[in-house]
Amino acid sequence: GATDALAGERIVITAGGTHEPIDPVRYIGNRSSGKMGVALAREARAMGAHVTLVLGPATEPAPAGVDVVPVETAAQMLEATQAAFSRATMLICAAAVADYRPAKPANRKLKKGIDDLESIQLEQTDDILARLSHDRGDRIVIGFAAETGNPIDYAQQKLVRKGCDAIVANDVSRSDSGFGSDTNKAWWITAHATEELPLLSKSELARTLLIRAHDLRS
Ligand code: PMT
Image (cartoon, rainbow, N blue to C red; front, side, top):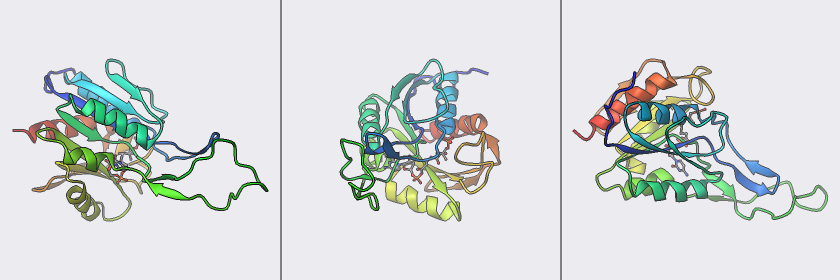
């Protein structure tokens, strides 16, 4: 049920994937459905927070009652997240952001026999989580880590490298966890503790994570 456990929090959530254009009709993307980030937005709102959802390409519709900023690329996601972050008390990065994008997207459709379609030159995107963790001041910043083996080890390294307050490591090698599923198997990892959580619906996991994130302040 609705509570006001998060009254006073202004939470920015990134969700969904990104599309990085190759030409006007093709892109590089990923399998994020948006379910995890949308569940966080819906539950945070129900718990009394003000929510801004920066939503990349996703199949899951945005929930009612939250401010939605639709974006397509990693660069747009960075800009929108940065703008909302300035007035926020908390940031949760649940989006699957492209790490690389085509360096020179074509402004016309590439054609077989005319263009070189064998290779695409890529360049790195900016890391939204790392950038905003660095500038967080007294805001709480939470990241996710999509891992296939050894979720805890890799996620602990990501926590240090990205400089956030906690990482939610989720196992994306299981069919009942990670991309597209309605449930998720995760670990809550801070500098002080690693907690294994049971397999939960994404809504239950969202509520569990929001309480833990809020409690980091006390
Ligand atoms: O959307 P669903 O289908 O429900 O699936 C949920 C999910 C599996 C996408 C989600 O639970 C999840 O794990 N999201 C993070 C996926 C990811 O890209 O993880 P990563 O290990 O590559 O990135 C680590 C963290 O850095 C993430 O918080 C990510 O949002 C952030 N990041 C990464 C790259 C980048 N350029 N900018 C970022 O902010």
